Image (tube, rainbow, N blue to C red; front, side):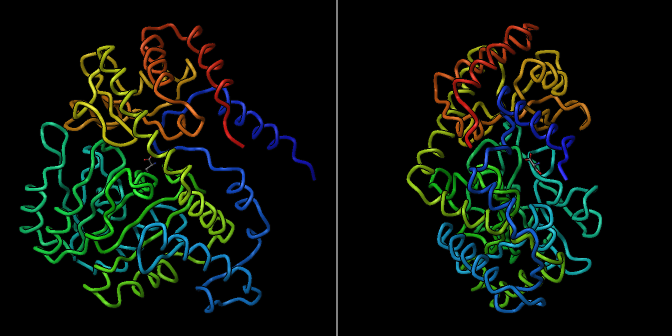
Length: 407
Ligand code: DSN
């Protein structure tokens, strides 16, 4: 059967991606090789269990694929154990909670409005509904206050402390986080979904020496397929010799059924790509581009929370512009610049009408854009927000043609 309806929709989405500029910091362009793996015959196979211990026959080749993904992931991040089966970040975090936090035991994570994630203990998520959760904030400058984090952890005694973010523009002090873990006895989970590509390339410090478990999605700065991995560190194994077994058991059969081995193959490829000098160069440029874009926006009168960025993203505070984040995001989309509205730390507006815009450089950097284009994008954003949408849209399309989407 030829499904022209779906084919036409995919074609239109392909055009949209080509003709617009993606500044959503959690989005990127996976290579053609990764996409080929995800669309391959591997999608036909059930493989519940782990390599060498499957519940279905016919998994000899699948075992080789999953072992390759595991070995490449361990090598890239320097860990003794990796689980490559989580379907994505939220189920991976759910598996860590299932593995390490018993009924009635506490979880502690960063507030969503401060840049944390729903699965770090927010009241609307399973992590805050089924576990007693406490949430730490950022200080008046939008920075993580490790002193406050330590105080809260000593009082609340969480079983699991989650450190990581979806909207935090600065470097995490993993050594300090590790000290808090040592003092309080909490297991530490580092959620590096946003920064994993930077960590792999040495552009952000690695949490591996200081925490027990690391979770990352594989499709953001890491530029792989949509999926996630869970890493168990030497420190984690020294704290709890059964930690790797607990994590594996929580992923399967605790949380999931059959792993998506097509995605696992894509993860194997992405881990190999991320180990290349080209990728290290890419990650370096992502950070340079973010700094340039933040500087360009500040020069045009935009307030950036924390006064800039150390990583791939920034938060624009629109309070003094008289615009909500959503209004700005819609205006920018009409001009071909795709972003997302986001809360800013201590946002005066409610979560459905946040005052910020979250902007990042992983996708435009994959397209080959560098500092001059960042300066241009800041100017295009400013013009679009002033109402010059049609003209900006045409210029964005031209820029997109000069820097084509790869693959
Ligand atoms: N959706 C992811 C992000 O955009 O950061 C978080 O789940």
